[in-house]
Image (cartoon, rainbow, N blue to C red; front, side, top):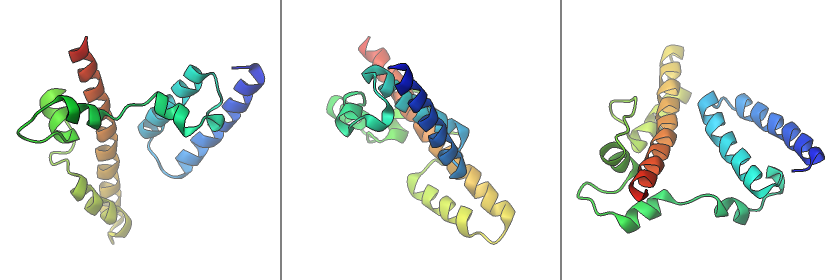
Length: 147
């Protein structure tokens, strides 16, 4: 990347981080997202705001499609099953569940007690962060199997 593009990228990247922080995203979520954006920018030698969706798609893969096309399972092929039984990932929550996370989210918004809202917010953030980490664990596990 040219020096002027790098400076422009750094300014825009700082703006993005500020926006994400102002939207209350956790640092680990911001880190995962920003590493992906930076990686694609480096691979294409292009500033992220100038990348097309096709350029992004060239560097990302649909893990679920890969799992679905190459595995058979009695218990299903969803993230919770594959990450737990295949990659050995463990969620922090004892009952990780996408549908339940919607209820936790609503509690984070609407619970009358600040402590309940805070606890629900933390639970949702941990659940979502763990989903990202589980996806990464599945990716690493699949790469290991492919080696």
